[in-house]
Image (cartoon, rainbow, N blue to C red; front, top):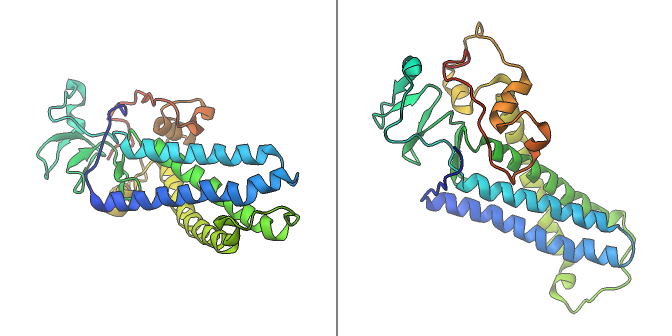
Length: 265
């Protein structure tokens, strides 16, 4: 699960994802060139600041690319249904295929996805059982990278000592103010949007409900038992080791939880 390449042919999704990659490239190239390296050369900051920025940038793009091409939990055409769990499967009225409960048919992708949360155009993929953990990492590292960029933009003008050296013949330094204003504007927009999205995702995991279930109001059964938050997060990330929740360079091994667990609707 989660190891197959899943590529969605959607021009709108390509444009959205291309915009995200452009913003990432813009800040990854210009912020070190305009702020980090010049201030490091003059002894204003430590090399740790540069390494941390590239570390956040690497984890951000890695989670983005992996979330966009990872199989979100697409059901096979002829799924093998265990005899003991047949009553917990249902027929999709759109593709006429059997699927486990809490699955949903994505009209944009054209197939059912296990425990689908939503279809995200920014990764050009569904967010489902097998790539939800990567989507959460993307939101987390995007917030960190955007916040770090905004802090550097602010410190460059109001905290760091003025640069004594500067090659003003270079385009970047001659248009430094405009480039950093663009960086700050993009950082504010992305930070504001991704923070709200990340909050709703976390609340969904705490309550063990997907975005689709919230919108359809199909999880109002308050009598059902609630799992501990550690258990719901472990099921999403595929491991009980919390340190591994933050690492995108691994394969998710789903925890074996039967479909008929009490939280199924």
